[in-house]
Image (tube, rainbow over all chains, first blue to last red; front, side, top):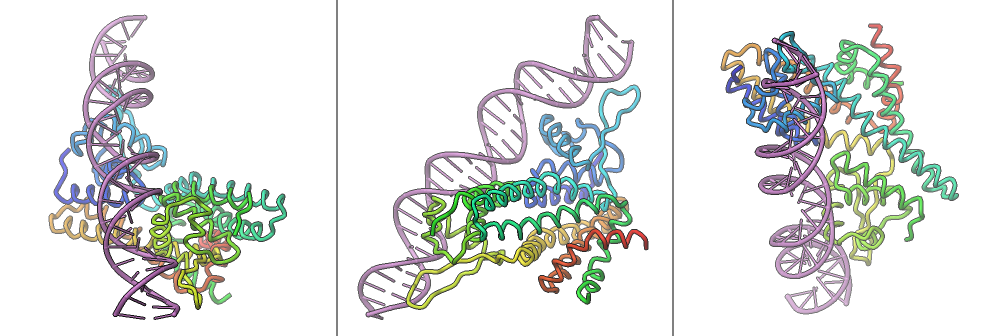
Length: 173
Length: 173
DNA sequence: GACAAATTTCTGAAATTTCAGAAAATAGGC
DNA sequence: GCCTATTTTCTGAAATTTCAGAAATTTGTC
């Protein structure tokens, strides 16, 4: 496989965006590469195309797999793994949302819960109230994200596209 | 001002969460401190309470102000600034959403736009299609976030709380 | 407008993160 | 079941980020 000028540009940009989103540049670049690739690639090919160390590619692909953003496929008579990305952008968004919920929001909910209990035990009503408010926010975010997972991609897409209309509607309730 | 056991625990936890969300620990801790504080604090007091360097507090507060999560107030006959946090959690969420949109999504939209143009110019229809799909996703995220800004906090809260119901509804369309 | 309190910016040190190279483990084909 | 291609893990070096201390700037009062 050979990358076009444009593809390379996208991959670089995607890598840059990644760093802003807290994703290592090389991980984001690999994701970008698989997103624009027309056929599955081997790890070796990716090293070549992006000039990354084999170890780095291995670790980054594993991370992407843990987000369910990249699949690994095997082919008969070939012991190498072939990788391809989830290219339905809505499905992609859904999976990122789910993983972030799991890794980031879920932990926060627990932490605040613990603090709320401590505040009550201490009889600190001011702090308890603050913890309760924060808990409501985190729980709601958690709920929205969880429910979103239940629906299929086209629903997710429609929900997002309708977001503004829905908000407008709700503002009149 | 004196911090209770619970408050200190929350502040530390909040700092930990911050690092997961890409926010420096000391910045997140200051935000946590102001969130649980019962009255506005001076920078000096915050140094004392959290054992941070004055310079660090200054920089972090400025960052929090840029997210509109912290206000600065002045008092007559006192040249120091007094800081307090936005403590309405829904308003807080709205402001974070807006800043992240501005800093993270907006740039991605432009980058992909540029790549889409390049792909078309190159006659690379495969890449162009991928860019268009990505553009749709980013634009929608951008739109939802932008529209959400227009409504007041209670609408934002209600919208989030209703999220699951709305999704369920849409799934039937 | 001078002075002092308060804040911000600058600089570099410490800690963390990212990533390459080498060594170890795994796995598929014969 | 052995052999080797492939992948993963381990280690440390390079880059980045975070943050303290010092110096510079700003701000408000007199």
